[in-house]
Image (cartoon, rainbow, N blue to C red; front, side):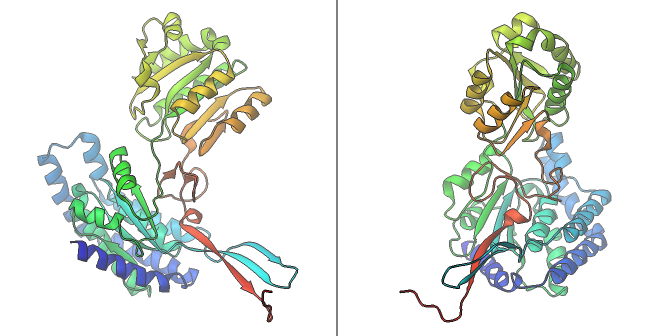
Length: 416
Protein backbone atom coordinates (compact mmCIF):
# COMPACT_ATOMS: atom_id res chain seq x y z
CA UNK A 1 0.00 0.00 0.00
CA UNK A 2 2.87 2.38 0.74
CA UNK A 3 4.16 1.91 -2.80
CA UNK A 4 0.70 2.43 -4.29
CA UNK A 5 0.12 5.67 -2.39
CA UNK A 6 3.53 7.01 -3.36
CA UNK A 7 2.88 6.05 -6.97
CA UNK A 8 -0.41 7.96 -6.96
CA UNK A 9 1.28 10.95 -5.38
CA UNK A 10 4.06 10.72 -7.95
CA UNK A 11 1.54 10.79 -10.79
CA UNK A 12 -0.08 13.85 -9.23
CA UNK A 13 3.30 15.54 -8.93
CA UNK A 14 4.05 14.93 -12.59
CA UNK A 15 0.61 16.18 -13.56
CA UNK A 16 0.97 19.32 -11.43
CA UNK A 17 3.94 20.52 -13.46
CA UNK A 18 1.81 20.49 -16.61
CA UNK A 19 -1.43 21.60 -14.97
CA UNK A 20 0.13 24.73 -13.50
CA UNK A 21 0.85 26.02 -17.02
CA UNK A 22 -2.61 25.33 -18.48
CA UNK A 23 -4.92 28.16 -19.46
CA UNK A 24 -7.92 29.30 -17.46
CA UNK A 25 -10.23 28.31 -20.31
CA UNK A 26 -8.84 24.76 -20.39
CA UNK A 27 -9.35 24.31 -16.65
CA UNK A 28 -12.83 25.83 -16.82
CA UNK A 29 -13.80 23.53 -19.70
CA UNK A 30 -12.56 20.56 -17.67
CA UNK A 31 -14.71 21.62 -14.71
CA UNK A 32 -17.78 21.89 -16.94
CA UNK A 33 -17.03 18.49 -18.47
CA UNK A 34 -16.69 17.03 -14.97
CA UNK A 35 -20.09 18.47 -14.05
CA UNK A 36 -21.79 16.92 -17.08
CA UNK A 37 -20.05 13.59 -16.50
CA UNK A 38 -21.23 13.60 -12.91
CA UNK A 39 -24.84 14.14 -13.95
CA UNK A 40 -24.51 11.34 -16.49
CA UNK A 41 -23.12 9.00 -13.85
CA UNK A 42 -25.92 9.60 -11.34
CA UNK A 43 -27.13 5.99 -11.52
CA UNK A 44 -23.71 4.42 -10.95
CA UNK A 45 -22.94 6.92 -8.17
CA UNK A 46 -26.22 6.08 -6.45
CA UNK A 47 -25.49 2.36 -6.73
CA UNK A 48 -22.09 2.80 -5.12
CA UNK A 49 -23.62 4.99 -2.43
CA UNK A 50 -26.24 2.33 -1.63
CA UNK A 51 -23.44 -0.13 -0.85
CA UNK A 52 -21.86 2.33 1.56
CA UNK A 53 -25.21 3.11 3.18
CA UNK A 54 -25.97 -0.58 3.73
CA UNK A 55 -22.61 -1.04 5.45
CA UNK A 56 -23.15 2.10 7.52
CA UNK A 57 -26.56 0.90 8.73
CA UNK A 58 -25.08 -2.48 9.64
CA UNK A 59 -22.43 -0.64 11.65
CA UNK A 60 -25.22 1.30 13.42
CA UNK A 61 -23.85 4.72 12.48
CA UNK A 62 -25.78 7.68 13.86
CA UNK A 63 -28.59 9.35 11.95
CA UNK A 64 -26.48 12.48 11.43
CA UNK A 65 -23.61 10.48 9.92
CA UNK A 66 -26.01 8.58 7.69
CA UNK A 67 -27.42 11.88 6.45
CA UNK A 68 -23.93 13.19 5.63
CA UNK A 69 -23.18 9.98 3.76
CA UNK A 70 -26.43 9.77 1.81
CA UNK A 71 -26.54 10.92 -1.81
CA UNK A 72 -29.72 11.54 -3.80
CA UNK A 73 -30.10 12.57 -7.43
CA UNK A 74 -30.69 16.11 -6.17
CA UNK A 75 -27.46 16.06 -4.16
CA UNK A 76 -25.51 14.75 -7.14
CA UNK A 77 -26.95 17.59 -9.20
CA UNK A 78 -25.91 20.04 -6.47
CA UNK A 79 -22.34 18.75 -6.65
CA UNK A 80 -22.38 19.20 -10.43
CA UNK A 81 -23.71 22.74 -10.04
CA UNK A 82 -20.92 23.41 -7.56
CA UNK A 83 -18.34 22.53 -10.22
CA UNK A 84 -20.03 24.91 -12.65
CA UNK A 85 -19.95 27.66 -10.03
CA UNK A 86 -16.23 27.08 -9.46
CA UNK A 87 -15.67 27.41 -13.20
CA UNK A 88 -17.29 30.85 -13.09
CA UNK A 89 -15.05 32.12 -10.28
CA UNK A 90 -12.18 34.49 -11.11
CA UNK A 91 -8.94 32.63 -11.83
CA UNK A 92 -6.27 33.43 -9.23
CA UNK A 93 -3.39 31.92 -11.20
CA UNK A 94 -1.17 34.51 -12.87
CA UNK A 95 -2.43 37.45 -10.80
CA UNK A 96 0.30 40.08 -10.32
CA UNK A 97 0.57 40.84 -6.61
CA UNK A 98 3.39 43.35 -6.79
CA UNK A 99 5.51 45.03 -9.45
CA UNK A 100 8.52 47.29 -9.04
CA UNK A 101 11.78 48.34 -10.66
CA UNK A 102 14.93 48.39 -8.54
CA UNK A 103 17.54 51.12 -8.69
CA UNK A 104 19.79 48.78 -10.72
CA UNK A 105 17.09 48.41 -13.38
CA UNK A 106 15.91 44.91 -12.43
CA UNK A 107 12.16 44.47 -12.83
CA UNK A 108 10.45 42.37 -10.14
CA UNK A 109 7.03 40.77 -10.62
CA UNK A 110 5.42 38.86 -7.77
CA UNK A 111 2.94 36.46 -9.41
CA UNK A 112 0.33 34.13 -7.92
CA UNK A 113 0.99 30.48 -8.85
CA UNK A 114 -0.39 27.04 -7.86
CA UNK A 115 1.03 25.29 -4.81
CA UNK A 116 1.48 22.01 -6.70
CA UNK A 117 0.01 18.85 -5.15
CA UNK A 118 -2.68 19.17 -2.49
CA UNK A 119 -3.39 16.14 -0.32
CA UNK A 120 -6.82 16.05 1.34
CA UNK A 121 -7.79 13.57 4.07
CA UNK A 122 -11.45 13.70 4.97
CA UNK A 123 -14.33 11.83 6.59
CA UNK A 124 -17.89 10.80 5.76
CA UNK A 125 -19.14 13.40 3.27
CA UNK A 126 -18.67 12.21 -0.32
CA UNK A 127 -19.35 15.70 -1.69
CA UNK A 128 -15.88 16.66 -0.39
CA UNK A 129 -14.44 14.45 -3.14
CA UNK A 130 -15.96 16.61 -5.85
CA UNK A 131 -15.75 20.00 -4.15
CA UNK A 132 -12.09 19.65 -3.20
CA UNK A 133 -11.06 18.29 -6.59
CA UNK A 134 -12.84 21.17 -8.31
CA UNK A 135 -11.20 23.86 -6.19
CA UNK A 136 -7.75 22.32 -6.54
CA UNK A 137 -8.09 21.95 -10.31
CA UNK A 138 -9.36 25.53 -10.77
CA UNK A 139 -6.36 26.88 -8.84
CA UNK A 140 -3.97 24.82 -10.97
CA UNK A 141 -3.20 22.15 -8.38
CA UNK A 142 -3.24 18.39 -8.69
CA UNK A 143 -4.98 16.62 -5.81
CA UNK A 144 -4.62 13.34 -3.93
CA UNK A 145 -7.79 12.43 -2.04
CA UNK A 146 -8.15 10.00 0.83
CA UNK A 147 -11.73 9.70 2.08
CA UNK A 148 -13.22 7.83 5.02
CA UNK A 149 -14.12 4.16 5.07
CA UNK A 150 -17.84 4.96 5.34
CA UNK A 151 -17.94 6.40 1.82
CA UNK A 152 -15.19 4.44 0.06
CA UNK A 153 -17.34 3.00 -2.76
CA UNK A 154 -19.04 6.33 -3.41
CA UNK A 155 -15.72 8.18 -3.42
CA UNK A 156 -14.14 5.73 -5.85
CA UNK A 157 -17.02 6.15 -8.31
CA UNK A 158 -17.07 9.93 -7.97
CA UNK A 159 -13.31 10.22 -8.44
CA UNK A 160 -13.34 7.86 -11.42
CA UNK A 161 -16.05 9.90 -13.09
CA UNK A 162 -14.55 13.35 -12.67
CA UNK A 163 -10.96 12.24 -13.24
CA UNK A 164 -11.88 10.62 -16.57
CA UNK A 165 -13.78 13.72 -17.62
CA UNK A 166 -10.87 16.00 -16.74
CA UNK A 167 -8.46 13.87 -18.77
CA UNK A 168 -10.80 13.76 -21.77
CA UNK A 169 -11.01 17.56 -21.56
CA UNK A 170 -7.25 17.77 -22.08
CA UNK A 171 -5.83 17.97 -18.57
CA UNK A 172 -2.90 15.71 -17.70
CA UNK A 173 -3.59 12.21 -16.41
CA UNK A 174 -2.97 12.15 -12.69
CA UNK A 175 -4.56 15.53 -11.98
CA UNK A 176 -7.16 13.92 -9.69
CA UNK A 177 -6.07 10.88 -7.66
CA UNK A 178 -8.02 8.97 -5.03
CA UNK A 179 -6.41 6.45 -2.68
CA UNK A 180 -8.70 3.39 -3.03
CA UNK A 181 -7.96 2.09 0.45
CA UNK A 182 -9.27 2.80 3.93
CA UNK A 183 -6.16 1.37 5.57
CA UNK A 184 -4.73 3.82 8.10
CA UNK A 185 -1.27 3.09 6.80
CA UNK A 186 -2.27 4.62 3.47
CA UNK A 187 -3.23 7.87 5.19
CA UNK A 188 0.03 7.85 7.14
CA UNK A 189 2.01 7.39 3.93
CA UNK A 190 0.23 10.38 2.39
CA UNK A 191 1.00 12.47 5.47
CA UNK A 192 4.69 11.68 5.08
CA UNK A 193 5.06 11.91 1.29
CA UNK A 194 7.82 14.50 1.39
CA UNK A 195 8.73 15.88 -2.00
CA UNK A 196 5.45 14.68 -3.53
CA UNK A 197 2.74 16.42 -1.49
CA UNK A 198 3.17 20.18 -1.16
CA UNK A 199 0.27 20.83 1.24
CA UNK A 200 -1.99 18.55 3.28
CA UNK A 201 -5.48 19.57 4.40
CA UNK A 202 -7.44 17.43 6.87
CA UNK A 203 -11.23 17.82 6.84
CA UNK A 204 -13.10 16.16 9.66
CA UNK A 205 -13.19 15.86 13.42
CA UNK A 206 -10.61 16.99 15.94
CA UNK A 207 -9.23 13.46 16.21
CA UNK A 208 -8.37 13.39 12.51
CA UNK A 209 -6.80 16.84 12.59
CA UNK A 210 -4.63 16.05 15.61
CA UNK A 211 -3.52 12.76 14.06
CA UNK A 212 -2.44 14.58 10.91
CA UNK A 213 -0.57 17.29 12.84
CA UNK A 214 1.23 14.72 14.99
CA UNK A 215 2.29 12.50 12.08
CA UNK A 216 2.69 14.71 9.02
CA UNK A 217 6.08 15.43 7.51
CA UNK A 218 4.60 17.71 4.85
CA UNK A 219 3.11 21.18 5.44
CA UNK A 220 -0.40 21.05 6.96
CA UNK A 221 -3.21 23.59 6.79
CA UNK A 222 -5.88 22.99 9.40
CA UNK A 223 -8.28 24.38 11.97
CA UNK A 224 -7.98 23.22 15.54
CA UNK A 225 -11.49 23.70 16.79
CA UNK A 226 -14.18 26.33 16.75
CA UNK A 227 -14.74 27.41 20.35
CA UNK A 228 -16.35 30.69 19.28
CA UNK A 229 -17.56 33.47 21.56
CA UNK A 230 -19.93 36.41 21.40
CA UNK A 231 -19.45 39.28 23.87
CA UNK A 232 -22.41 41.59 24.55
CA UNK A 233 -21.11 44.99 25.64
CA UNK A 234 -23.13 47.14 28.05
CA UNK A 235 -23.82 49.59 25.21
CA UNK A 236 -25.33 46.92 22.93
CA UNK A 237 -28.78 47.15 21.39
CA UNK A 238 -30.80 44.50 23.27
CA UNK A 239 -32.79 43.21 20.30
CA UNK A 240 -29.70 43.05 18.11
CA UNK A 241 -27.80 41.19 20.81
CA UNK A 242 -30.61 38.68 21.27
CA UNK A 243 -31.02 38.05 17.54
CA UNK A 244 -27.29 37.64 16.90
CA UNK A 245 -26.75 35.35 19.88
CA UNK A 246 -29.73 33.21 18.93
CA UNK A 247 -28.59 32.90 15.32
CA UNK A 248 -24.98 32.13 16.29
CA UNK A 249 -26.07 29.22 18.49
CA UNK A 250 -29.26 27.84 16.97
CA UNK A 251 -29.07 28.22 13.18
CA UNK A 252 -26.66 25.27 12.81
CA UNK A 253 -25.06 24.23 16.10
CA UNK A 254 -22.93 21.39 14.69
CA UNK A 255 -20.63 23.58 12.57
CA UNK A 256 -17.33 25.14 13.61
CA UNK A 257 -18.52 28.76 13.33
CA UNK A 258 -21.36 28.31 15.83
CA UNK A 259 -21.13 30.22 19.12
CA UNK A 260 -20.27 28.06 22.13
CA UNK A 261 -19.96 30.68 24.90
CA UNK A 262 -21.88 33.91 25.38
CA UNK A 263 -20.13 36.57 27.45
CA UNK A 264 -22.38 39.33 28.82
CA UNK A 265 -21.36 42.59 30.48
CA UNK A 266 -22.85 42.82 33.98
CA UNK A 267 -24.36 46.21 33.12
CA UNK A 268 -26.74 44.68 30.58
CA UNK A 269 -27.17 41.14 31.94
CA UNK A 270 -30.41 41.72 33.85
CA UNK A 271 -32.05 43.38 30.85
CA UNK A 272 -30.88 40.80 28.30
CA UNK A 273 -30.62 37.36 29.83
CA UNK A 274 -34.12 36.44 31.09
CA UNK A 275 -35.79 36.80 27.70
CA UNK A 276 -32.79 35.49 25.72
CA UNK A 277 -32.39 32.39 27.88
CA UNK A 278 -36.09 31.63 27.54
CA UNK A 279 -35.84 32.08 23.78
CA UNK A 280 -32.86 29.73 23.61
CA UNK A 281 -34.46 27.11 25.84
CA UNK A 282 -37.66 27.20 23.80
CA UNK A 283 -35.48 26.35 20.78
CA UNK A 284 -34.10 23.29 22.58
CA UNK A 285 -30.83 24.77 23.80
CA UNK A 286 -29.39 23.48 27.08
CA UNK A 287 -28.04 26.58 28.80
CA UNK A 288 -25.23 26.37 31.34
CA UNK A 289 -24.16 29.45 33.26
CA UNK A 290 -21.88 30.95 35.86
CA UNK A 291 -23.27 31.69 39.35
CA UNK A 292 -24.25 35.26 38.43
CA UNK A 293 -26.10 33.97 35.37
CA UNK A 294 -27.96 31.43 37.52
CA UNK A 295 -28.94 34.15 39.96
CA UNK A 296 -30.73 35.94 37.14
CA UNK A 297 -31.97 32.73 35.47
CA UNK A 298 -32.36 30.04 38.16
CA UNK A 299 -33.34 27.27 35.72
CA UNK A 300 -29.96 27.42 33.99
CA UNK A 301 -27.58 24.54 34.77
CA UNK A 302 -24.31 25.28 36.53
CA UNK A 303 -21.29 25.70 34.25
CA UNK A 304 -17.83 24.58 35.30
CA UNK A 305 -14.30 25.07 33.97
CA UNK A 306 -14.68 22.42 31.27
CA UNK A 307 -17.66 24.24 29.76
CA UNK A 308 -15.59 27.31 28.94
CA UNK A 309 -13.11 25.14 27.02
CA UNK A 310 -15.65 22.94 25.21
CA UNK A 311 -16.71 23.08 21.58
CA UNK A 312 -20.12 21.47 21.99
CA UNK A 313 -21.14 21.28 18.32
CA UNK A 314 -24.62 20.82 19.73
CA UNK A 315 -27.56 22.75 21.17
CA UNK A 316 -25.64 23.58 24.34
CA UNK A 317 -24.50 27.07 25.34
CA UNK A 318 -22.34 28.36 28.19
CA UNK A 319 -23.03 31.87 29.52
CA UNK A 320 -20.71 33.95 31.69
CA UNK A 321 -21.27 37.44 33.06
CA UNK A 322 -18.14 39.61 33.08
CA UNK A 323 -17.42 42.98 34.65
CA UNK A 324 -15.47 44.60 31.82
CA UNK A 325 -14.50 44.37 28.18
CA UNK A 326 -10.98 43.48 29.35
CA UNK A 327 -12.33 40.50 31.32
CA UNK A 328 -14.23 39.29 28.26
CA UNK A 329 -11.11 39.54 26.09
CA UNK A 330 -9.04 37.71 28.72
CA UNK A 331 -11.62 34.90 28.71
CA UNK A 332 -11.45 34.63 24.92
CA UNK A 333 -7.65 34.69 25.00
CA UNK A 334 -7.65 31.80 27.46
CA UNK A 335 -10.32 29.56 25.97
CA UNK A 336 -10.72 30.60 22.32
CA UNK A 337 -9.32 28.56 19.44
CA UNK A 338 -8.61 31.48 17.11
CA UNK A 339 -11.60 30.81 14.86
CA UNK A 340 -14.39 33.42 15.06
CA UNK A 341 -15.14 35.94 17.83
CA UNK A 342 -17.80 38.67 17.99
CA UNK A 343 -18.64 41.79 19.95
CA UNK A 344 -22.09 43.39 20.06
CA UNK A 345 -21.71 47.08 20.91
CA UNK A 346 -22.64 50.65 20.03
CA UNK A 347 -19.34 51.93 21.41
CA UNK A 348 -16.83 52.49 18.59
CA UNK A 349 -13.86 52.58 20.99
CA UNK A 350 -14.84 49.24 22.51
CA UNK A 351 -15.28 47.74 19.04
CA UNK A 352 -11.83 48.94 18.03
CA UNK A 353 -10.27 47.62 21.25
CA UNK A 354 -11.89 44.24 20.66
CA UNK A 355 -10.78 43.90 17.05
CA UNK A 356 -7.26 45.08 17.88
CA UNK A 357 -6.82 42.72 20.82
CA UNK A 358 -8.58 39.53 19.77
CA UNK A 359 -6.32 37.08 17.94
CA UNK A 360 -8.64 35.11 15.66
CA UNK A 361 -9.09 34.33 11.98
CA UNK A 362 -12.37 36.29 11.88
CA UNK A 363 -13.44 39.04 14.28
CA UNK A 364 -16.98 40.43 14.06
CA UNK A 365 -18.63 43.66 15.15
CA UNK A 366 -22.42 43.43 15.48
CA UNK A 367 -22.77 40.27 13.37
CA UNK A 368 -23.12 36.53 13.88
CA UNK A 369 -20.06 34.27 13.85
CA UNK A 370 -22.02 32.01 11.52
CA UNK A 371 -20.81 34.07 8.55
CA UNK A 372 -17.33 32.51 8.66
CA UNK A 373 -17.72 30.56 5.46
CA UNK A 374 -16.17 30.79 2.00
CA UNK A 375 -19.50 31.12 0.21
CA UNK A 376 -20.75 33.79 2.62
CA UNK A 377 -17.50 35.72 2.18
CA UNK A 378 -18.01 35.82 -1.59
CA UNK A 379 -15.21 33.34 -2.25
CA UNK A 380 -17.55 30.90 -4.01
CA UNK A 381 -16.37 27.84 -2.13
CA UNK A 382 -13.78 26.61 0.33
CA UNK A 383 -11.90 23.51 1.45
CA UNK A 384 -12.07 24.45 5.11
CA UNK A 385 -11.39 27.14 7.70
CA UNK A 386 -7.80 27.75 8.78
CA UNK A 387 -7.01 28.97 12.30
CA UNK A 388 -3.30 29.04 11.47
CA UNK A 389 -1.36 32.17 10.56
CA UNK A 390 0.76 30.60 7.81
CA UNK A 391 0.09 30.59 4.98
CA UNK A 392 -3.67 31.15 5.00
CA UNK A 393 -6.15 32.18 7.70
CA UNK A 394 -9.94 31.92 7.71
CA UNK A 395 -11.91 30.37 4.83
CA UNK A 396 -9.57 28.56 2.41
CA UNK A 397 -10.69 29.25 -1.15
CA UNK A 398 -9.00 29.50 -4.52
CA UNK A 399 -6.50 32.22 -3.60
CA UNK A 400 -5.53 30.36 -0.45
CA UNK A 401 -4.70 27.33 -2.61
CA UNK A 402 -1.99 29.32 -4.36
CA UNK A 403 1.41 30.72 -3.45
CA UNK A 404 3.57 33.18 -5.37
CA UNK A 405 6.89 33.42 -7.11
CA UNK A 406 9.03 36.41 -8.02
CA UNK A 407 10.01 36.85 -11.66
CA UNK A 408 13.10 39.00 -12.13
CA UNK A 409 13.86 40.55 -15.55
CA UNK A 410 17.12 42.28 -16.29
CA UNK A 411 19.27 43.44 -19.22
CA UNK A 412 22.64 42.06 -18.20
CA UNK A 413 22.91 43.12 -14.55
CA UNK A 414 25.43 41.31 -12.35
CA UNK A 415 25.81 41.58 -8.59
CA UNK A 416 28.98 43.20 -7.34
